[in-house]
Length: 406
Length: 168
Image (cartoon, rainbow over all chains, first blue to last red; front, top):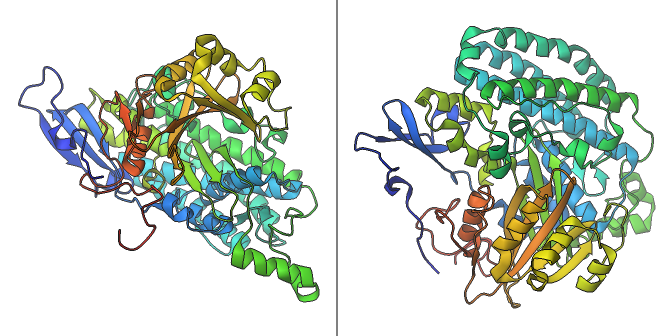
């Protein structure tokens, strides 16, 4: 079964017309601006990038294989660890996929809380992108500012789920527990001040001549290339295509929210910066609507064989105790079939493809993460540009290596 | 259109009768009705099973029909049943705001299909991933190297006869 085909990376035949003066340079996997363990093999002519090969797999943990050996509900904590900057979005996508297989109706309140927390996750993800991107360019201060706000979001996550990063708060059939009583007030207090904070970042960066000249006109990606290469999310929308799953293929009651989808046609790093900044403001709007219109009701679906019973019920009702025992020890069977659920995460379109063979363990879980496809566009964006621009472009496409390598 | 249809259409005849105006289905039938082996509409998702030799042309056909945004390629190993592998392609249409799934069944003896990278350059990494983890080859792929596992790795980890932990 062993075979090595294809061309190893350092022996790739030189581009046509290239002379011996080209140099092959390894950037990463420990380079600080590669956001994790991305290795870029660059063929450079002086300071001009001739070709670029991303080399990935350093964080590969075989998470898709591990999922096949777990019960459906045990996969939820695994999904947190894939895109570790957007835990709630991972949970949401996986839970929606399994709920689609089970054809389970989720109560409205649970759906709204999911929207609320997923948008906070998007803010969290964008804040880290903004801080690290600016730091790559040399504007170190912004990092400290964005991490100040990120800390507030992580405290909200801790209040709601007991965990700062690996939340596992969304469960198949709803949420793991009732949110704390003061949660909505805390989120309200946070978003009351957050738009001013975005202004603060914009004040630091938008008028900054170094930041501007490092990003304007750098890393151009055309709309056609973006779609052909599978680029999604804010990176794609900065190139022109106007498509957002939250608006165009709504899930988890996103159709009840009013928001704009920022689009730019410039297609450079600057456009990506601007689009993401506006996206943060739109997320605040969605959070405000979710807080204002939060419906009343249960937070778990009425499916005793799938959703764990309340603690109180277990102490008084025999059935509840039996269901609890059965779910924990045997899991729950899921009807055979295959589903693909895609959602708009902070980085782009995230998709979970879940295949069931009718047992309590998923037969196959495939995770489609946006960074994997976005990385393919890196060569197109960097070709013919200066070596220093690679740093700006890698920052602007907002990749997380955890989601690429899985 | 398909949003309103909640029921399951289990086979090709039912799908053809139930979704006569579906743009992808119409395009495939107009191109080559024999290439469509099977169809299924389940949980509001349309799955079209395409004959193994025709996948690249089928991909080009649905692209021309408006399904422009390629999502992913992945595989399922149905070991020990035959045909062993199922390749799954997910494609989203920005204009119809809808997703379709193309499916190809591949035998274990010669696990090889045409690459769709010439149609969507974005399939490049996904096909490398399927090759790496399942050992299915894609003819016409520009550089079919392993992508996640090391180059000298033996075996294909996502196959069902490959253990989750311990020694092989």
